[in-house]
Each structure stands twice: as structure tokens, then as C-alpha cells.
Image (cartoon, rainbow, N blue to C red; front, side):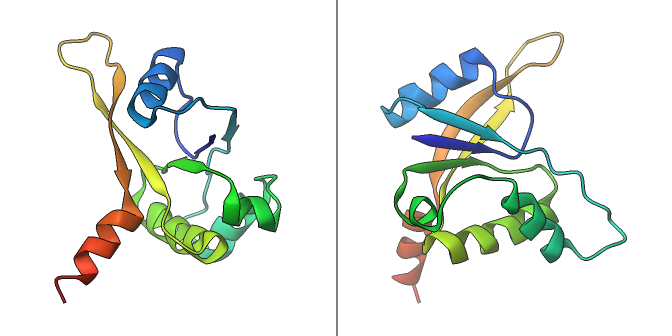
Length: 126
């Protein structure tokens, strides 16, 4: 599995949590931190961000990809649209949360959200 990380660095503990939840080994982590200019349109900036991800068109469509979204909702929304266009489906994403009773604050993996499955189930409710 390839982990595309558009957020904070993944700790070894978080990597173990992801592998336990997915029951797959992370073969490669591609980390690209978004640094957006809020005065410029986001779509071209997302395209430039994804240009830094060294995947072939075939890998975009067939490699097992898992995504950690950026925290800014506008960037995440545009990124999901772009990923869907490249992949042909919505990718599964990692949801993190603050770990309980930790100082300093630490984040843990809460769940893996299968966005395509969520979308497919929502279609049945139309």
C-alpha cells in the first residue's frame, strides 16, 4: 500500500495503527505538505501539489492508495475532486484525532474511511 500524506508527518506509532486497521503493510509513504497562497485559486495549486507525487497514470488507477488529507477543508475538497479524476474513484482516507489525556498533544489514527463505499451507499438512498 502507498500512503499519500498531505498533512503532518506520520509517526511510527501511527504507521503501525494504519497497518493494523488496513491489515496491509505500508510499502511507501509519499509526503507532500501543502503550502497554499490563499489569494490565488486553489485548483491550480492542488494540481501543482499533485505534480510532486511521483506516480504514473497506471499507478494512480491501480496501486493501493491510502490518503491523509490536509486539514484545511477547502484544499481537502479540491484534492478529493482531483484524486477522483485521476483514480476513477474516491480514495480511502485516514482520520486522526487527538489522543485522550496526553500532554503535549499527540494524535492517533481513529479510523480508515472508505469514501467510495460511503458514496456507493449514499447512492442507494437517492
